[in-house]
Image 1 (tube, helix red, strand yellow):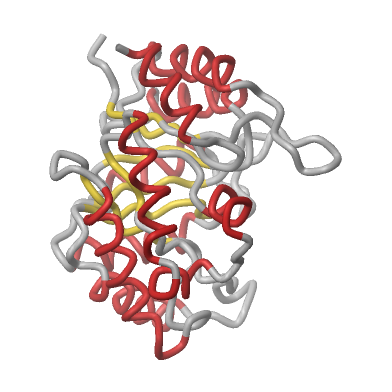
Image 2 (cartoon, one colour):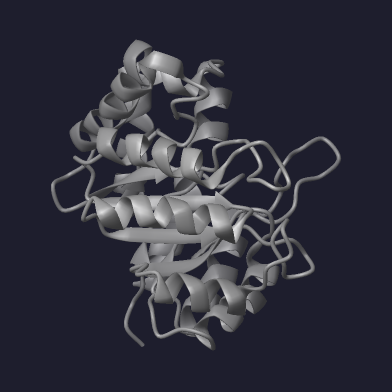
Length: 266
């Protein structure tokens, strides 16, 4: 088995817990040392790709500041990691539902994603993640590919194995493959146990590299993730054995989880 590429873990939850700052977008400019510290720790733990702190930045939520925030996010990640570690432009859902379920017209979504991609073109790849709508993911993917960027796309699936909009891993794999994605898969929502089933379905539906970036299990009633780094690493290593090409962590994971994962996969 070829060893998978190791991604990073959660940024936002770790950053907020350690700094007390919840304005992640502005932190790229106002707290650059703290932002770089998180990326640096993931790189030391074994991450071969880190996602810049741009998940919460878009023209709607950040207004006129969005361009500077994204550029600063990419610069901070670049400054924090060795040149051998690739930097991803982290692209999230826009926070509005596409028509006809919401007020966001596809043409407007395409315009907004094109602006995000243009601001983050200095990244090594576009990491389109936590998508709850395949249609929105496809719009973001088109923006990235139009800009000539390598594009990873991960959707988030519930315990029922479907996105919020009801799409299956098989449907997502088929349509994202046809649309030119470079790697596809899942992130967030579920822990490594449920992620294994979702990963298997992706692996059976596409020849593209598959990404698996689950949460650190499920949180307790207080929002705490209790799975140990060792348990997370062992479970995710089993998913890697299935053939996943990229593995990492989402909510509740830390550099310790990535460090353990790196050890297990070596």
